[in-house]
Length: 235
Image (cartoon, rainbow, N blue to C red; front, side, top):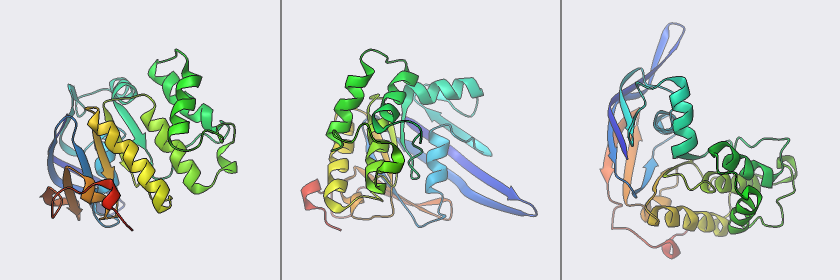
């Protein structure tokens, strides 16, 4: 599903050059649930931006499925995101003038899945516990509720690759567990899920844990002690 070869992302800020990613190599198979750990500034969000074609590397190669993103045009990258990616942004990125239901429905409309989009959006909102909040606008929702709308929007298309940047960051424990159940179910249906988090407890339910430090992969392997069940988590 995902192949990164010697990926470098450099940001030039005047006389200063910062390497957000510094020679990253990574392979992720179909259906894997991978947690990406690392402190702030380690390159986690930049890595997701490379995989989702929201940004392009300074050098190296990024291939997702059959798409070589380092050789793709802007139009091809847009089509790739529409057909392949579900993305939970750390800052939610909800449309302020659309209701929660319309924000989720928008993802279906853009993907071309227009048949009964309102019913499909309502069903996923119900699954994240917001069935009665669909007609509220983002400013009328708490941070945790906005986060769940963002998760619903990423899940609703059923695209084969889901990328989540701190998907439980604004959630209490019980709601965070509810969201994690949805993400793991997504992977169990054969889709690939990458979760960026600073919460090491979440890494216990992953197939693999990739740790970033200063733009490099510091560790890559199964969770220490083996994979845990969601019911075993606590934070």
